[in-house]
Image (cartoon, rainbow, N blue to C red; front, top):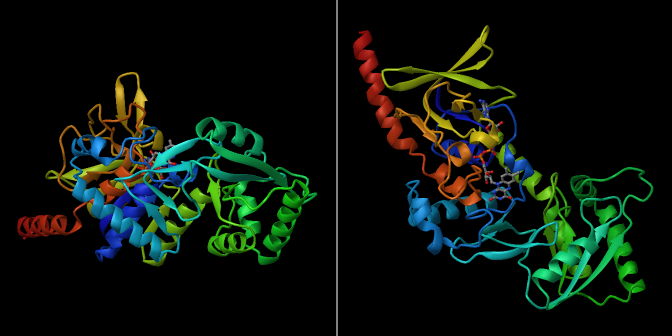
Length: 387
Ligand SMILES: Cc1cc2nc3c(=O)[nH]c(=O)nc-3n(C[C@H](O)[C@H](O)[C@H](O)COP(=O)(O)OP(=O)(O)OC[C@H]3O[C@@H](n4cnc5c(N)ncnc54)[C@H](O)[C@@H]3O)c2cc1C
């Protein structure tokens, strides 16, 4: 029997598992995949595809019972957690920061990892490509960046990396290689040579694809910073290092803290007794495995995460097999089931994209302690009934 069972290991599921562990709960995560976190930029957006700050958008969060105070507390909690797991985040929900993406577009985000720096309005920028990485093209990035920031003075270089490897590299391949001190020393020498040949002076900021180390990112940034100048990653198409770092760091930490993971498992049914969910079923209909629980957190990502399906008759709940509303939540709410992250529809998105900040704050809003009291009373009632 687990105190808390979480369905899904996207950002919502992983954060909730860690929080539940901090509350000393017995926690299990059941997930059939890794979630959108792997395909994200690693930025925590307030309202995805919008530049609204919290003052302009807090009424939308309130529709989901998330207050400004709760958002502030959850962001502080998230930042403290990320510091502890050696992947610090900066930024604010009150003043969004302009960051550059792997396509050269500038977007305003709330929180960003410290491998990223906000993009200035003026100054000298050098966009650094790596031979072999085809999903980050410096000239294309420059073209888009110049449209967004016409006052920047932008140069580009492409540096040989893994010369002769004979295959296309992903940003994650390059990030893993950058972890090695000797490899990055060679890279820095090549970059300096390239800059000298093209007569490029030390820029105010260098923009890289998201490849600045997988685990030794602090060292990579420090080495580049000390030998040339300030750097930023521009996360774009998956797989990029910013997203994988985030997932791996949260997953490793959750495992280290004792969260039990049932991976590659699909939940297809929930058993409800006396208005309370008591177990979920995974595996298949003919040979299901029952996992008993006191509290269930649905972090199944809704339509995009696979927890819900759009069928001819409307939305279908392929996770709990219970009647659901057009928002994806239960027609008859159940006391010990909580929906977080993209598992239910957002007032700001027809596409079910919730964004990092809502995901963090909805995870943070799950009330473990009070549920325990309710469950204790339920257990006592069951015990009395059985007796
Ligand atoms: C491609 C893409 C990129 C994005 N990038 C960003 C970004 O850069 N910044 C940002 O702020 N927001 C981004 N978003 C928004 C995103 O919606 C949220 O920020 C957040 O990542 C959603 O997390 P989640 O945990 O709620 O859902 P998901 O990440 O979708 O996770 C759902 C989890 O539930 C599992 N699951 C589903 N059904 C079942 C089942 N029946 N049994 C077991 N497991 C199940 C899935 O396999 C997965 O593990 C992006 C969205 C998309 C689609």
